[in-house]
Image (cartoon, rainbow, N blue to C red; front, top):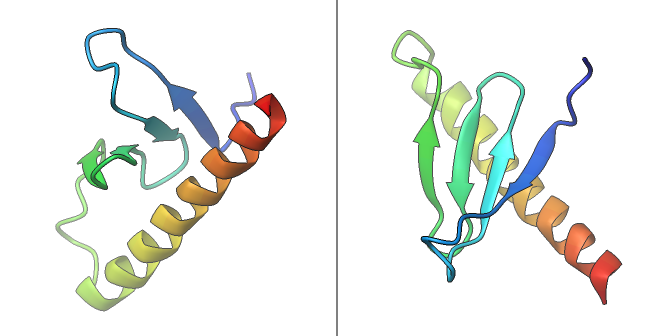
Amino acid sequence: MVLPKFLLADNSSFPEDIFVLHTEFPRFLINLKDDEIEWFEDLSGEREDDIADEVSNLIEAASLFYDKQIEGYE
């Protein structure tokens, strides 16, 4: 099965939250309401500078993905 890079996630227990799941390395779930991230990978062996740049780019990409998805509903 080929998974999309990003998926929207919803949970009725958290009606105010907006979740985006990143399915490629490094896998994570971000709550766009407060930018809180839950990592599914151990990134402790990675270089801090490389990870910081990649995380920043991935957060921006997740936000853009969400915006494009919502545009489709409007």
